Length: 413
Ligand code: ASP
Image 1 (tube, protein in one colour):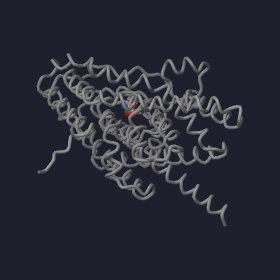
Image 2 (tube, helix red, strand yellow):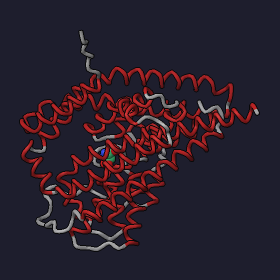
Image 3 (tube, helix red, strand yellow):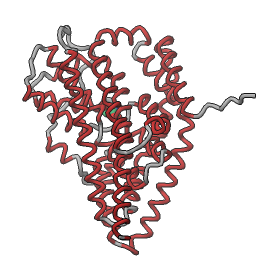
Image 4 (cartoon, helix red, strand yellow):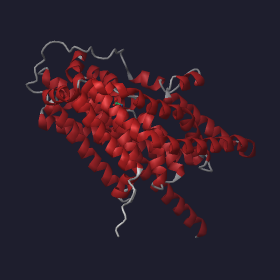
């Protein structure tokens, strides 16, 4: 007799996405009654972020054995982040030029929701955001970039202390293990949390009819962003197969939980604990995983970069302002920086887009044109952001392993 396999957690999570979508679609704002369940899941995940990021980065670096290897790990990670983000923006630019989603879009009355408050963001602000005068305050405010910079320096210092540094290293090793155990427990909340997050968000935006109206109103724009994101996912899968030499299907299977969580929370930072667990289960070496993922969740945002490029061209087209080749190169560079500067929280990309609009002299009010559907596109781009980080861990991990094997061989010969 054929035995039925019990559905795994990922299947329950996939079911939760579908059920949440249907409930929000049909029952509209009545579903906001379950929003607290989503908040419970999200807050529980967020609770782990600070200790997990600190323990993961510190043990990732001290585990390298020799602080000089940090240069290699950092260099490889940054090279991966920068090149994939540039590819993503380039895809966005090509798609927006081909599909011309903004042409003929009526500017109409100013949007009912005002664009997010902005201040003049520049490159110096980006560099200044790397440090914070009080590390406890940075952690309390969930400013991850300064926390990561502090942990990198702290771990580098620890690795030079040899025997004297060992008690602190073992403390963070235990902290890291305990955090990962908590992630395993919290994952069981995921199906309910995902269902509630999706149903209540779709419900709050007015249910099925309102969603369809938003989709149809900005149909070509949504299609351009989504098809660009799909193309970029294909590029990432190729990198995974060629550079990391991993089976794409198998890797995706391990990543189902973080990807579905990214879609429902629209936050790469909140998803980080699950991304760490998924990539660990996929067998990526600790050395790469513990360093590449926390840093990637903060600075590596391929989906956001692609979306910003499309959105800026959309706004230019809607206003009838032609952007020449030089200006599009400027979009390429500034959208990459804007994506690095965006925090891993919902709709952060919408705020840093100001950098790109400024650079090419477009009206900031243009953001009002794309606000209505941003909550949905945010989910799509966050999923790609998380996938990009996970592929990065595999690619860098593979490279570190082959370096290690080569060094070992040289020692033998
Ligand atoms: N929500 C995105 C993330 O967390 C950032 C953004 O594009 O708004 O990755």
